[in-house]
Amino acid sequence: MPELTEWENFYVIVGSAAGALIGLQFVVLTLIADLPGSRDDTRAGGAFATPSVVHFGAVLLLSAILSAPWHETRPVTLILGLAGFLGIIYTFVVIRRMRTQTAYQPVFEDWLFHVLLPFVAYLVLGASDFVLRYQVRLALFMVGGAALLMLFVGIHNAWDAITYHVFIRRRRQGETEPKR
Image 1 (cartoon, rainbow, N blue to C red):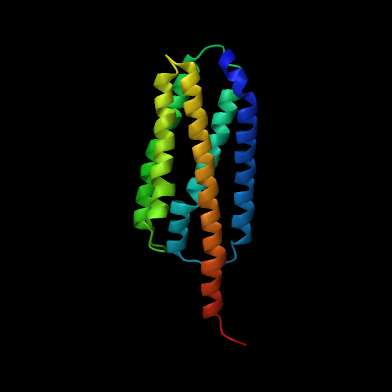
Image 2 (cartoon, rainbow, N blue to C red):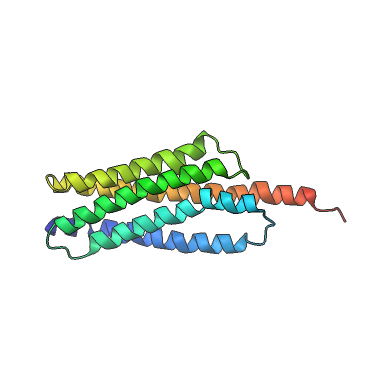
């Protein structure tokens, strides 16, 4: 697909950023692993931390797929459609996790960045499957937009989780420790 050659630098940059952010997420989680936690905190991690890694992973996967030397569009359309569909299903998993965890009460911003925006990104990705059959250029912009949206959602969510742990949980931990 010669149309993809124009996107090569885009996916090198976006894919590299996603890969680096996955690694950084692991480093941060390792650094805060010593904070005391509960079973509810583990559930909250599944609702609020894991999706960031999933979104970064999706961007990395998209970058790899769209950087491959495809000779026709059919395999690409199937992969994009499947990725979009699986992302939509995963969004419903996140909704269930957010509702069942009790460590943190989600606010509008959480629903926006953990549910609505990822749902839109995966919906656009899935729709690009159909558009790619008729309008390759438009579909490639849809995929690029979905990838960027997932990348920025992941960045926001990772930052939000880290600031919560550093400023809220550590402060609470300090308040409950006995004074010397």
